[in-house]
Every structure is written in C-alpha cells, then in structure tokens.
Image 1 (cartoon, one colour):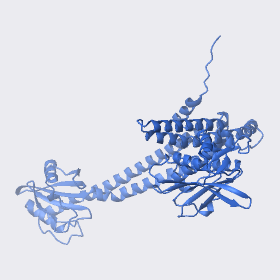
Image 2 (image 1 turned 180 degrees about the horizontal axis):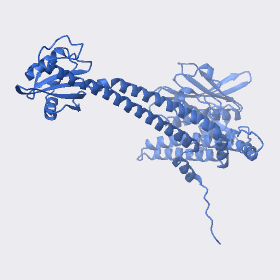
Image 3 (image 1 turned 135 degrees about the vertical axis):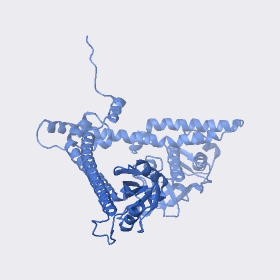
Length: 512
C-alpha cells in the first residue's frame, strides 16, 4: 500500500513555521512600504543630484568670470562696471597684474582669492575673507602642482574643514619671467548647504509619509483579511480561552458565511470547557509555589548533624509533599466550594495549629520577624484547608508588605450576636490597601495595580475566601493606605475546650 504524507503542520512545527514566515498582512504592508520607499528615495536622490549639479554649475560660472576680468586688467582695460579703479595702460609685471586684481576684486559670500608668484602665496584681497587659502600649505602645494601655464584649471579639493571648488588662472607678462597664479575658490559645502538642508527635510517628510502609508496599509489590510484570519485561527483548532471569546463576523449568505456560522457554534461549545481548564491550570500553578518554598527553606537551613531537626524537617517535607499531591488532585474543587467533600472537619487545637502555621510561614522570608498569638481553644475545622488558606495570607503579606517588617499570625475568639467565632488573621506593616479596591481583591484573577510585577495568578485570596465560606465563614479585611493590612478568616467556633497536649498531638501530626 502506498504511503501518504500528512503535510499539515503540527504543534511546535506549526508555531515555528508561523515565526519563520511573515503573515500575508505583514507582507502586504512591507511590499507597499518598500515600493513607496524606493519611489521616494529615487525621487529624492534625483532631485538632490539635479539641485547639486545646478549649484556646482553656478559656482563654476562665477569662477570662470575671473578669466576675462584678469585679461582686461592685463590689457589695461576693464569690463566690470562695479570696479571703480581704472587701469590706464597695460601692466608689464605679474606682481602688478595680481596686485590690481586683488584691489578690484570684491569676494562673494563663501569665496576666497589668492595670488601666487613663483609658487609662493603673495597677495590676498584687503576685504575680509570667509577662509584663507594661504593658511593651508597642503592646498597651496596642490594648486602649484595642478597649475598649467597654458590653460585655466578648475577642480575640487577636500580639505580638513571644507570642500573647495577652485579655479587656477595662469598670469604672465611679456617682460617678466615670474610665473603668477590667480586662484579663486568657493566653499562648496556652504554653497550646497541649502540643498543639503532641503534634502534632510525631504528625508524627514519621506519617513513620516512612509510611516503613515505603513499604518494605513496595516489597517486596511487587517480589515480586508480579518475574516480570513479568523477562519484560519479557527481551523487551526486554537484552544486559547481569549481566542474563544471572539466570534467571526457573519456577513452575507455565501459559503464563507456558512463556515463562519459553523465555527462560531464550535467556539460556543468549547468556550465553557476551555475556561474551566484554564482556571484549573492557574489554580495548580498558583498553589504549588507556597509548599515548594516552605520545603526549600527548611532544607536550606537544615543541620544534618542534628537528628531531631532532621526528623522534624523530614516530617514537615513529607507533610508539604502530601499537601502538594492533594492540591494536584483536588484543586478543581476550589472552583466549587459547595461540594460536600470540600472540607473534612475535625477537632483541632488552635494554639498548636497557630504555632505550626507560624513555623511554616517563617520559611517564606527569613529576613522578617514572625510573631504568633493564639487562644487555648479547640475548634472543628479542616486543618489542612485552614493551613492552606492561612499560609496563603502569610505569603501575600510577604509579597506586598514592606520588606523587613514584622508579620503577626494570630488566632482569637470573638463573641457575636450569632455566636462565638474563630478569627485567624495575618497582620502586616505594609502600605495598606485603598478603600475603593478592598471589595474587589477577593475576585478571581483580581490583582492590585501596584502588585502587577509580583508573581502569582491572582487566585490566592479567592481560594482563601472559598475555604472560609466552606467552613460557614468569610474573609475580612481591615486596612487603610499607609497603615498596613489585616486579613482575617472568620469562621464559627463549633467546640471550645481547655488546652490538652494529648488531645492536639494527633490532629496536628496528621495534617498533610
């Protein structure tokens, strides 16, 4: 029989494939942004190059005007109407020609002029120059090396602080053996400053435009592809509770609409079971942290040479491990606190239980001072569930109170019109809880904004409340901002008797 290969992605391979490949929406947006970016880049670069060439051509035209001006000076006439100095006769020396030229020249902005005789800087205009070429020996040497006695030379040089576009005009006289050079140069960086600034502005505008294009493309593509995306997610069989709360919009009566209706029905059937499973997993993850911390704390402080301490730690570790096993098997019952077997009541010595819980709680934070207070009283409670709830309150006090401050674990009996009640409390010296949020912190998954960075699923206080209600009681909170908090498990006191060590040994030792 021929074998067929299942090409459907499974589990982690499907997730890896999604991470390796961009979504259709992302590819559409990237394609639009890339094409728009290339178009803007091409137009911007072309515009910049055209403007740059225009500026360079203008600079060259201004440089070349020096040639007829020098010719007119050498011949004894001038065509420059802005020059007030007249030249009555042809000049017969290079020095005279350059000197008259320096007297008549009025350098433009970003322009400098220099006269050289026999390769040595000799003359500069009397006007204030934006930069001095004679102060740059390297540039002077380059001018001398590039000069041609038979023709004008134009070029560009990069100096330490600027880019120069220069013109070298050879100057000679029939009766003078000296070789003269008339050099005029423009600071090309300054001349191109407006062009560069314009290009930088274009870049900023183009980037902003690309951002807008990308955002618009993302929104439009998302709206167009949303039905397909929802269908894909549904077909992938996602069991995430957040996904199951959404429904695919149904528009029209085509095949896609009928498929969307069928998938919405599937989501309706899966949502209840998915939320229940999600809550169960959160409960397990939340509740296993406390016993693990207790066991680890006692093992780290264990003195292996002390047989009594080893036996006590062994008993405590077994007790916590048994409680962890019980949590795993019974954590789902916490969501249904009215179950008949949720608590198993037995007569327990509250004083011994308080000391027992205080010993366990001290391992949560060894840097704090722990105090226990308790009456000598017996009560019918589920010691295992009460230990779980009491340690949860102690764990919350460690997490949310001021580090290093004391925590008090206390038991007390109070008389009310309905009868005597047993109050099991945890009091801290933390920042307190504002009055406007006290009624909401016992809700499932509800956490204070200030505690968002603390590990936990937000189920602790709701579990404590469920245990208290299963005992016929409730959880009370006394707190105010800046004064600390006191959480109290208040349950009816069914039995009360004097302290008897022989009576309490069995209930406390049997807790698991």
